[in-house]
Structure formats: structure tokens, C-alpha cells
Length: 409
Ligand SMILES: *Cc1c(COP(=O)(O)O)cnc(C)c1O
Image (cartoon, rainbow, N blue to C red):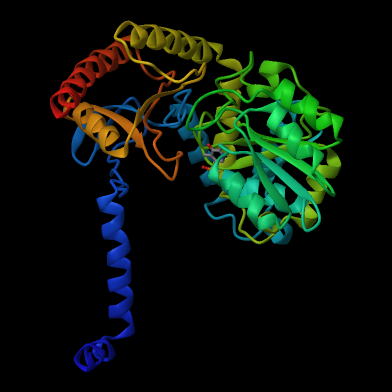
């Protein structure tokens, strides 16, 4: 015992820290939950180079194929030549430049709302909106499958925080009964890991009965959904009355970076005055706003992108059913194949990768325990032939996995 104490005393603090961290990392490995970052060595697109391998990718959120669009690149270049690179300061000091201002006006027009406020990331937009709108003594109610940034925002707000059953208006109603103070109901528009749509008509009706405010984060709906890419609110025909707080992100279908909150004059002014994640950060590079102005134009007017994507989604679902795969019930470019264990999910993604296909293996804690899945995403940049190739490989790999399960049993 004395010897052991001597050894412990001889260890430096950094040694002990490294040891503790190594134990945590080893546990993560043993649970098949260890994360690795694939190194992308090409621009975003259907065909990518990752870790030296040429792959057909079905895992990005570049749903409309705008991330590497020549006109968007040109707008970024011209923006940098005109406005330089760095934002330089926060918006309230001297970092709010003309391209930011013009983009906010364009996003307000796009969403049909009085104002929009630009953020550097969706994570920050969500932290900002929730924490500025509710605090101690108030209530925030969230779908239990909401994006991590919304759940974190709820905790940070110090409001009473409760999660209702996924997409369940009756479960929301039960929690609304117990709500105190200002009450904010928060949901993803399109659920990021399941691809299904929030049942906004029902959720908004419950919220209205209790005078609760509804906030929708439509990171995955803007672009693919709605006749003009206006996302889930356009899809359901809901306005400011039903959804006073509307969040969109710009790093997905817009193909650039950043996010926005759209709503009333008073909402946006409240965020500017009180939202700490808005106030205490440098504005995004103005050239990025120039690029987004261009991608917004393409997103709104090039309907063929949405139409081609919708055809790919329909054909993919039909093809998957034909080979006996059960996809989650999703009308969006997010087409998850539920597997169950992390181990089997990694195995299947590994088999696909051997055949040149890259898909996301999504494991807990990103999704609930026991619901690990392949998150297959489609993009308007994919050709029919590329999607058919995915189906052929899925068929092959799924059979291999099934045979292995049989021989294990
Ligand atoms: C990606 C995502 C975010 C975060 O947006 P970033 O701009 O990537 O920080 C927020 N909400 C949802 C639903 C998302 O899918």
C-alpha cells in the first residue's frame, strides 16, 4: 500500500490526467462508440476523396448541391475582394457589414417575415433564441429527439425544461398543462437523424390553446421542402401566427455557412439586445454572406434541384423496399436505415466502404441507445445512376450481414 502511494505521488498531474482520459477513451472504444473524423481531401460533392480513397458519398447535408457551385464560389471570391476576409468585430461594435445586412433583408423576404437575424452557426442561433426568450420561472418544452443544440439551449436557459414524446401532440398537451411562466415549445422541423417531419399543425394547435410560443428549427427543411424551398412552414402553409420563431441554417441546403432566426420586428430586436450568443461573438466573414445571397437565389429559383431530389427520394425508397430494406418513414433527403447495435452499424458501413460507398454510421449518444443506424442522405447533385449503385451495394452488404447473423445464431 505504501508503495502504491509512493507511485501515485510520483505521477505528475498531467500524467494522472492522461491516464484518466485514456480510461475513458478505452471504454468508448470497447462500446463501439469511438468516433473518427474521415479526412475529406476534395470539395463536397457526390464523389469525394476521403482518407485517400475515391468514394461515392451519401452522407453530406448539401441537399441541393450548392456547396461547390461555381456561381456561389464566384460570389465568395468577389465578396472577399470587395469586403476582405475577417468580420473584424461583433455585430454591435463594428462588424455588421453591408453584405450581412443585405442577406438579412433577403432572408426576411424569403421567409415572408418582417425581419431575419444572421448568426455564424445554427448551434449559436438556437442557444441565442431559447436563452433570450425564456429564463428562470419560465418553461421550455422540447421534442425528445430535438437536435443537441436545442436541448443544450433548453438547459442553458434555466427555464423549467421538459421533453415530450417524439412528435406527440398529446404528450405536449400534458406538459403544457403543468407549464408556468412564459412557455416556449421547440421542435426540429425535419428531424435530423430520422428525416420525418414535425406534425406542426397539431403541435401548433396545442401550443395556441395555452398561449405558448412555438419555435421551429428547420435546418433540414429549408431548400428541399416547400414549393419554393421555404421549408416545413411553406409545406404546411403556416405563418408567423403559428410559428413566431423560425430558425434556418445555411450550412446544409444553402451550401455555405451560418444560420438565421426569422420573425417579428420585436423578436429580432429582443435577440439583438439580449441574446448573449449573438452579442459576444465576431460576425461571420462578410464574403460568406455574399456567397449565401447567391445560393439563396439558386435555392429559390432553380426548381429542378428540388424536383430531381424528390424523384431520387421516391425511387430510392421504392428500390430499398424492393430489396427488403425497411427505411424509416421519411419524405425528405434523410433516409435512415435502422440497424440497432453500434457494432452491426459499423460493420455495414465498413462493407459499403469496401465497395466505394460512404454513408454515415450514427450511434448513441447522437441517437437513442439501441437505435444505431445508417444515415443515408440524397442530394440533387446525385445522378440516378449513382443512386442505383447505392441500392446494388446495399443489397449485397445487407445479405452478407444477414448471413453472418444467421451463422452467429
Ligand atoms: C446542423 C443542425 C444545427 C446546427 O447548425 P450549424 O450551422 O451546423 O451549427 C442545428 N439544428 C439542426 C436541426 C441541425 O441539423
